[in-house]
Image 1 (cartoon, rainbow, N blue to C red):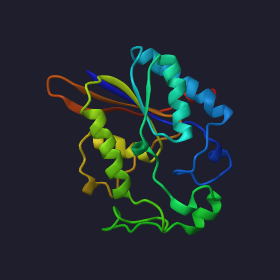
Image 2 (tube, rainbow, N blue to C red):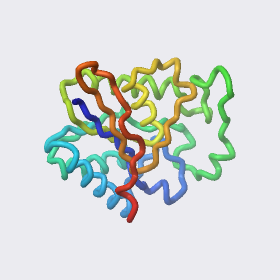
Image 3 (cartoon, one colour):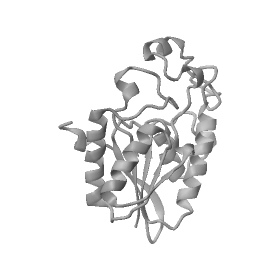
Length: 207
């Protein structure tokens, strides 16, 4: 069976400072580091030693991946295609300010190319790069591995795994909290790809 642990990074500095994230490059808080260690402990029980790790190259995900790698005795491959959606010039600004600037998408057509802020990415642009990263991962020979990414980008990782066409992603959004673990699987003989578990945060209960 092929198994992928999909991890969303835990608490980062921009969370507690209530700043817009996206590509704004902040690290984990002390609490976030403890949460990442809890994630690493779960994965060390579930995956074999040396299972490779693909991670967004932003600091908060790279730090999470490094702590997981320490437990799995594995290597981290940083890939900027796994970054969160970019919010352009709004990144690093107060979240309360941004909430007043957001242009919400239409309910019908046009959602895929809609920008919530003038210089932000749209869903199509995010999906195109995440799907390219997933093509690299899916076409590899690795059977058990970890992907470390961000809350919104992770929805597109799942969509790529189950083969949803990009044109169908205008409405897609899975509930994925910070510090979550989801499991993507594929097994013989039919080789169907499954979202086996979504948004598990039990390891964070005491943190």
